[in-house]
Image (cartoon, rainbow, N blue to C red; front, side, top):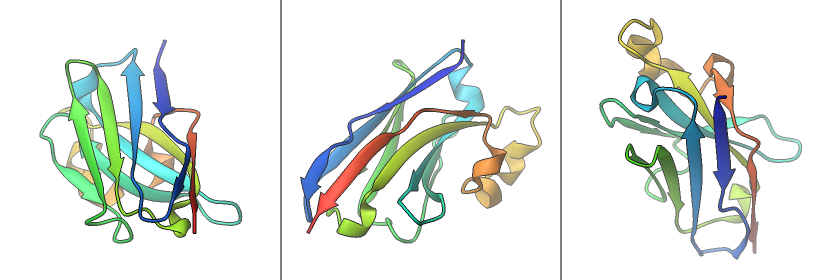
Length: 134
């Protein structure tokens, strides 16, 4: 059974930090990239970050560059999102998702263009709520 479990959300004051985790199982970890998306009430779902579990390349939305860091641990099949200098506008439900980027997949060459497109992802977790107070 394919599973993605996001955890680590909570309430934090502006300027604080939070670390989210995404535990993956049921698929070949290195054949997928793991993306982080967020959705706030009244807002569209936004791609936040992505990491290619095969070559380690990372991608970030302009709104979080320099503040968020994504990392991957192949031994535990876990992807983390370290969020620093949090702002109230970071408040959202954060989801992790998996997109196939195996060598035989067309998406492996397209990832730099499509990592932030939610409809390209194969699997989704349930999400974890992050609330940043002012």
